[in-house]
Amino acid sequence: MNRYITLLCLFFLLSACSVGPDYTRPDIKTPQGWRIEEKESADVANLAWWKAYNDKVLDGLIDQALKENKDLLIAAARIDEYAAMYGVALSDFFPQIGAGASFTQQQSYQTQGNPAKASQLALNASWELDLWGKIRRGSESARAELLATEEGRRSAVLSLVSSVASSYIILRDLDKQLQIARQTAKSRKESLELFQLRFEGGVITEMELAQNRSEYEQAMATVPQLEKSVAMQEHAISILLGANPGPVPRGKTIDELPVPLPPRGIPSEVLQRRPDILQAEQTLIAANAQIGVARSAYFPSISLTSLLGYASPELSDLFKGPAKLYSYSATLTAPIFTAGKISSQVKAAEAKQKQALLKYQQAIQTAFKEVEDGLVQQNRTREQLSAQNRQVDALRSYASLARLRFDNGYSSFLEVLDAERSLFNAELNYAQTQGSLHQYIIGLYKAMGGGWGIKAD
Image 1 (tube, rainbow, N blue to C red):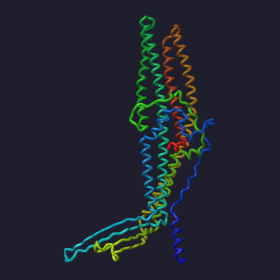
Image 2 (image 1 turned 180 degrees about the vertical axis):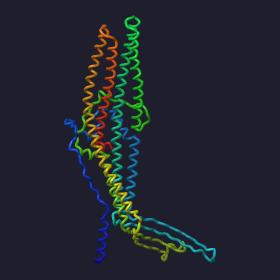
Image 3 (image 1 turned 90 degrees about the horizontal axis):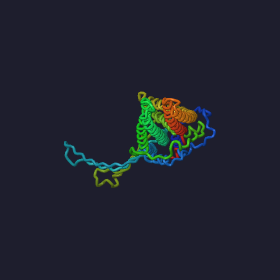
Image 4 (image 1 turned 45 degrees about the vertical axis):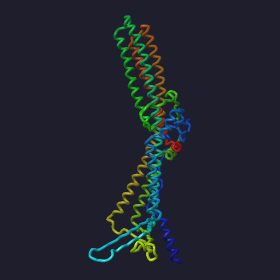
């Protein structure tokens, strides 16, 4: 009896061990802080950050995208695929039971008599004992791949929301530039009509009239160019929403949209929030488990099989007493000579694990770079926008004074042209910088990972 107890304990002890390395998270050197800290900013990284714009139209566009975007639906379907594969891996822990039936009749041409007959109906079962943790490592790998796929979907959510918000900001930026171009064209048309009357009255020369017409046509040429950009931007947003190309509703103008302050955060929080980093770590866990799967091929494999059923020469006697059939067996297989196949498979698994580790480290470094870039970009762009705003104010005053001097005969029309041309370009540049600032802020929220991604799910 003691011998059986010893064997039973040995069996459970072997069943509890798993070859291959257990996963431990690599040590990562993280910065102590960011180069630019926003001390007064509100920590909204764990909220739906786009709500800070307080634009109901933008909220509606993002809600529609989260429901209808095709890339996001593909990512969700991919999770279903990996969940099923994880189920396949778990099934190896349990016996596999099947059923079979057969009827054969054989007649030899060289002999006389009744043909030989055989009928069989049976249940069969097989079960591989997981002595070395091969199945456990396989299921561990499949589970990590499933979690990596889930993080991939969260990454798709993060990218989608950022893309919709960014595209909407670009659209409102283009709307403002188009408005500036149309207002400038209208103003220059009125000026051209006035100059036409002055030319007909002999007050100005034909050269001055031609100069005025040139500035008007320049503004008119800008209008269709911007209209084309607006239409193409609407089409791009429609695709993000999972809809056919068409018009996109508007909410607040870019001047009405508030400029959010970036979220507070420390480097360690970025590691916990960014789905691409979490995905890379799960991929590393899966690759680490595959080393154990490969190493288990060095050890013997034990499979238990059994069969229970009926067999009889006559189909009518199949379920009678003498027809009962059963068998059971235990099969042990062990590698003796594989010409380096197993060792090569182990080396391949170790190489994949090393690649996954380097990609994990690379993802972390890239995350820190993107956050640092975002902080610098939005901070310096705020300063640039303030300077451009002062420049626009100065050029408006310059254009007004130049027009007044020209009307009173103190300067030539070239001074007016220079002032109005500079003002037009400065207003367009200011609008573009407005859009760029919002783009950098959106990019920073994306780089921070945003715990809001879970709520968006």
